Image 1 (spheres, rainbow, N blue to C red):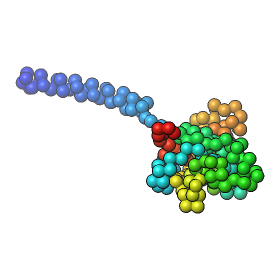
Image 2 (cartoon, rainbow, N blue to C red; image 1 turned 180 degrees about the vertical axis):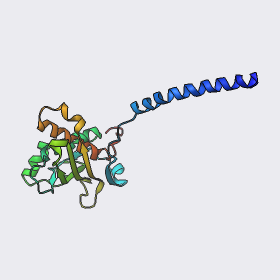
Image 3 (cartoon, rainbow, N blue to C red; image 1 turned 60 degrees about the horizontal axis):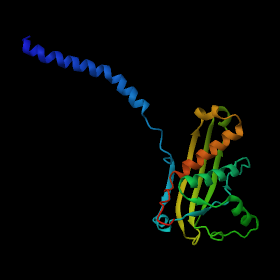
Image 4 (cartoon, rainbow, N blue to C red; image 1 turned 90 degrees about the vertical axis):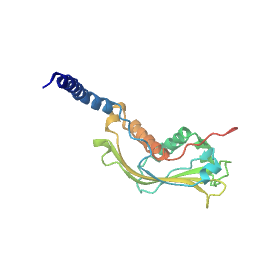
Amino acid sequence: MPSNARSLVLPLLGAASIGIGLAPFAIGLAGCNQLPPERGTHVQTVASDKLEKRNAIEVAVPPIQNATGDDTVPIVDLREAFQAGLVRRRYSPLSLDYVDRKVIDATYTPGSLQESAVLQVEIQGWDTSLFETRAALTVKARARLIDAENPANGQLWSGTLDHRFDFEAERERFTTQESFLRYACGRVADELLAALPAREAHAGS
């Protein structure tokens, strides 16, 4: 082979060997930088421009509707989780005790607490058959944000979730089953509400 040809081939071979050596490193780096799944991707939503126009701030969260027929569904923990989730979406949920006083007196109707919207949550399925053995929870739930001034025809947003949650990786962080279940409730609420557009703060709000 002529000397000038050898002078071209050798650098190419060197570059190729470097590339081969770097390939596993690049693959490993890509794996390390892989982002966790985005929240809210398992939620089917129905939205309208009413949500942005209404710019709801104060939100009432009435008691969770349990449509499963299973009295063990932790509706109290779920309600608290949805209240906290609204805060992370930059809404201002009313105190649950404040809402409950109206509910107990049977005097609550949407808007009677001067709220601008109501978050209605219905649990339609709650399967814990694999929760103790595999830390898996299958949930079917629906959330609706309605305009408190027009509850009959004022749906601002709705989201439906039908998903199996796997919490095996987080199980060891909790010392009791009760605290673990509260965490699971928080994850369910966060998944559903992640599909709710965060409130955009305007001047003076």
